[in-house]
Length: 366
Image 1 (cartoon, rainbow, N blue to C red):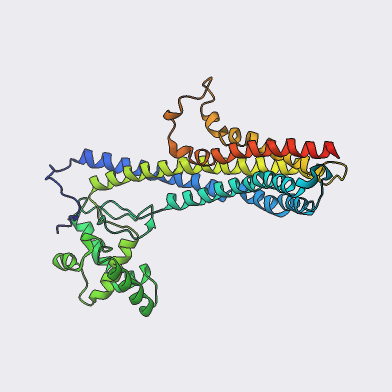
Image 2 (tube, one colour):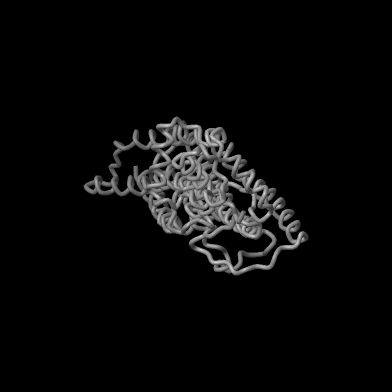
């Protein structure tokens, strides 16, 4: 039996036979990689469970922020005689200067959460898989299936094939009703021009190897093979399995490091915003306190420290250095959030400072 991979996108030079020592080294390496990949996924799962976010979100949306918005709306009709004929213009300016930092304080944590959810999707899903046709962009789980390497043992691989193509094995793998199975897999094969079926699992290749049971029908076999393609299961030689596992580790680490930092930034932004809300509410609910001045002061403090709070994780990473290094040394994928919101936060600092001074003037003039 010759179960080799004839990828349409790859050419392979003739390689000398692998020694037993080389094969054992690759097997040991694959075992270590599986442990490492498993560890990476456990880390992701632990943070995605997100006890911090799950506890903070109800607080963030249920009480404090809603209370502040209600207080803000309740004072929209306040008048300030000191403005005189410019009352409408002046009060509009004050409301805009207050509304901007309030809206921004809600938007940045939510935007950080949006980026976090996007990172989670990128971590777990991909549209590319080594060994498949590059034009195949069917979304798939980032961890593909594993198949016994055909160059390990031709006899074992033949036995695997023969067992997998029994009707009971196929029904176990794709337990859909006949109607749904036919509709789903036929549509998948048609939409991908048959590229979803791995090269070594095509009908002609299997028939040549004489591993298909005599009672098997071609549509059922191709449905099963399409399922293998959807699970990104390829019959890779041992060398390619090692190469693919190395690629998988690189991919998972690249996405996981960004995901973890994004999680921390999202959490601390929720905490910072919620903490400002906790402090503001008692003062805002006290009728003796100037509402707009208190609100403007609170969101001025929020704006002033928002960027330092966002940069805390990176400062923690460089804690052993006296100062942050040249920022060109920092991977821009790790500071996307800061770079995108920095301008808006700087505007908020200026606008909220104007609101503080303006509201202080209005209350002093009363």
